[in-house]
Figure 1 (cartoon, rainbow, N blue to C red):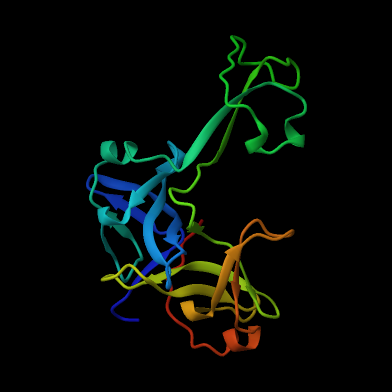
Figure 2: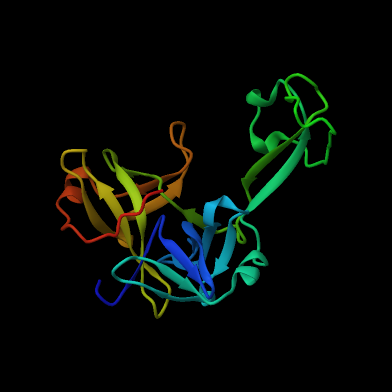
Length: 227
């Protein structure tokens, strides 16, 4: 994998005038075989704004030593990119804990008294931030999600390995094992069954390999980022 590019979740992303943020998603078109990377999602530094979709043609390089990603845009240009998150507004209510962000109406409400909690006054505004829909129906946002082998949970996604010439995903980077024996491995895309949801995990990457087969894979160097 020496000539391939690793996109690791949590990697620093640098623009033309400084650090832009952290890589939180890698968006891939799973209608193609193998999957093809189309965009990155970058969360701004210090959470100063909403995450942005960064088209892959803006990516100028990935540092093999640090995993840092460099993009060809300024901070102002980054802010003009399509938002990967949506902010919805809803009136105050004690019932907020009973509902998810997609169940609120997107209508603006305002109050002049910002010192009062929504549970105390039913007309106090509340904002809810949720993930925006992906650009294409076939797209999948790969992030630090659980990985399920054919016989149970096997670890967590660390990132994707991509052919820089074709943008095709060749391997999924996986941190497998227990606390006392963890290692990073690269699982070939041929072993990926699907990326979906189940009752216990909101997103799950499913493999055709068993946990033993995953454990038998050789370790690979992956730059660890604090998320």
